[in-house]
Image 1 (cartoon, helix red, strand yellow):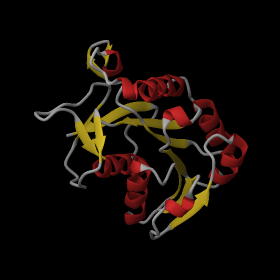
Image 2 (image 1 turned 120 degrees about the vertical axis):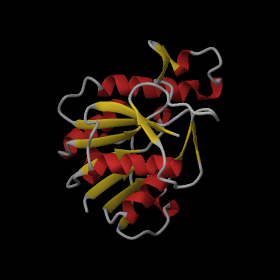
Image 3 (image 1 turned 90 degrees about the vertical axis):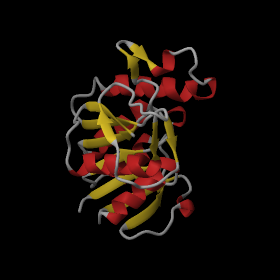
Length: 203
């Protein structure tokens, strides 16, 4: 059991990660702008917080063993988030990443493909920038977990594959459920294998 701070706990990915953490017995400070949207769960303390307020956020993060960030990249700032984790004195920082920066061939990112959906370009671009900034961070034990191209509601199966920097695909495309993504992220939290690295999860 660990004491975890989860930023963005009410979102699609955040709510599944929160449920996974609770089910495994962790104590979680669930931070969201609207904590009333967070479902009651064992060991979870819903808390009002703003990912854009470095000083207030750092105060909420202090005293935790790890921080998980599950906020949209277009609605947050990497310097603010990394700064808040640093200010709080927490070394372990896990980030719900994006798929756009994954490679589909050597040196060719998914986001740079001609058929990449325009609706997701801004978020994917900011996610790639976030990862590049993290790669320069040496004083935090960070991990950036990229989902597959389709990151959607589904089942918690526990059956998935892990990769590094290449988009994982299978017969039906490239996909991972929020529920199975949460398993992979909490596995990494409990047994770190990708410290200061990006990795990916998919079917």
